[in-house]
Image 1 (tube, helix red, strand yellow):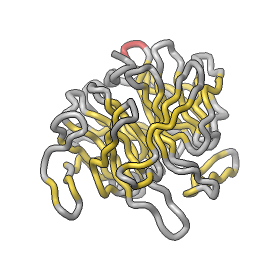
Image 2 (spheres, rainbow, N blue to C red):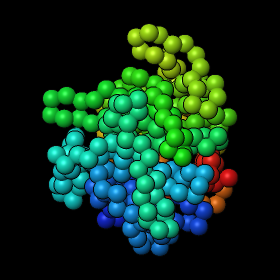
Image 3 (cartoon, rainbow, N blue to C red):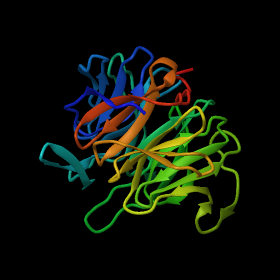
Image 4 (cartoon, rainbow, N blue to C red):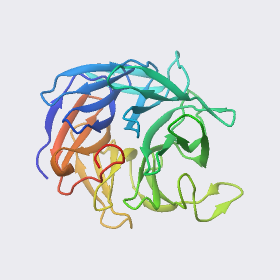
Length: 308
């Protein structure tokens, strides 16, 4: 692997990078409550300001950007770094938003599922059928935290289903190249799970009356290593942003031969692929407010409605 290179800095806890075909990269700024366009020369422009805590993003079949909004974190700023510290006192509720990246128009698609409020939507991926999976990481308070799960929803705002419940602070989410498995990374356990799929929004495999659908444990890391968001490469490896042991943990689908690509920020939160042949990895270094890029040894998996 080559050294990473700085694309831009001065972002307020960036996440959810989306590499656009024209070379721009969209990022959300959780601490800034905005969706930002980063140009190849490092300059930035605000696309929209939904407020709360925009956390993950993906382009949908209509060419609009779908954003997981966690409702807002309390943020600690110290020594030039920014750290999330749980639910903000001005928490505005979890929601899924749709943003026109040309006009900045914001629409709220989902705030509840079956009468239960979304707490902290985090990461999102579209399937080939036009629906999307997303995680609800929940919110932490001083003495308690939410129990949440994973959802499937339609892009037109007409239907949402809780597919996996409970899950331990689900964060990163992605699909295998053949879309027969759904990958979910749990933050606090440092575990990556795979769930067999049987059609759009439908889980296959065993189900128990206590914990619902049972996934396949792909990997669990030892020591203090927390999982954040993820992307899948063209070989099917799951590339998970890793906190404390800051970097990208590369996990094959069978969990063997796990490797780690270190980054200079212990709060490395997300990765996406773009550029020529999808062999450029864009990585968010959140506590230091940077978006960096590096050459990747394998192309990324082409995303539906973006790279194909």
